[in-house]
Length: 139
Image (cartoon, rainbow, N blue to C red; front, side, top):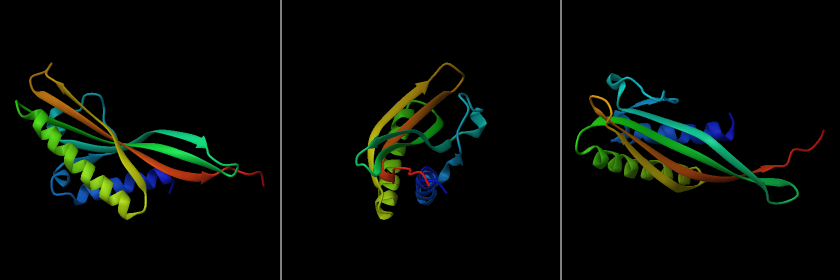
């Protein structure tokens, strides 16, 4: 299993164990407009990784892990997403720390789409995970 896959699994397991986040259906990734009957949804992805050579023999890698939530709501939709963000940050940070992984919150974005019949809110909570990998050597 790749390191990125390990990071996603740690986050998924932590979120599945969280009382608030365990109520959401976890998926690998979502379409731009999932069917409202499927909501609320939760996804964990690692869309970006930036390597930097820090020594002659290793790269430092900064992997961005994102946890996304989509849910239906009304006037309190942003409040619900704020509570989701708090639960995600706590669960992911503590789980990574317990595994010895350096993981820091990076940013949180909230979008509310009110174009359709129902308001759909999207939260993306990003974390920066820093780790090292040896420089590949010819065999």
